[in-house]
Image (cartoon, rainbow, N blue to C red; front, side, top):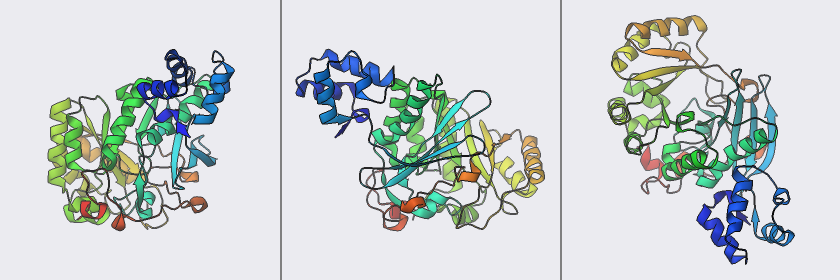
Length: 367
């Protein structure tokens, strides 16, 4: 079956021509998919029955198979999807009091980066998602929200995987979100563990998409222990790339800081971070560590976080504390892990196949 969400308008036109349909059918179907956001061919009421029958035989509106869903006490919803090759991914919808509806979507099945405090990193890597598989996670939420008179307002690439390790597909999905769902660039955020060359490449894309960089430590040895990617691109090289990004885009960069009790929540660490970032157009998003099964660290306490923020302010570095959402269903930052229901990806970060990132194997990437 051909997934229509994976097709460009030209490819949809070509498909319909091959089915013996006139070219204007593509415009009709595109409208039903992305303006009316229907989930069934039968709902495309201005199409002849014969056309709908051909579509049923040749194509589908989506390729993700919903396996399970969970809802948190705070109304955050997590979905587990099976892919066509029996890999699994998760995505999350987060409602906010100001009427924002934010989708957190995955860019890979598993992750090759191996961050020790992240459940997805603990799983290992299976494969990159296609642009269509990335986009469809947001499309499903947008379609369901539309049906009840609401809209998807924001999308963050903070689910499973490293978006810049799947650069081409992630950027293609970003453009699909903008052009097909009318989500503004400034309402889309890409999060990276710090792949410096890709940050520079992203800076040259000319997009107004937000960039978030996971930092978490100010010392190379300590950061490498938490985040193996630091062995390849240390803090100095990472910050050089971030300065290049700011100079090219004139946009503020966000640094993610998972606040771990006794590890990186001290006043001394805040002073080091303040000195490191002083003068850079940036913002610190402090995230009390979310629990994961294979990491013993504990979340920093509110008093420590307040002291940390106060120190940063002395250096002119602004910070906020992220509201923790979906913790009771393991839907928080760093908690997504498809070992639930036996959905653990095949493969690992150290034995990953070649990826889309310059043909490098994931084990080479992290050396």
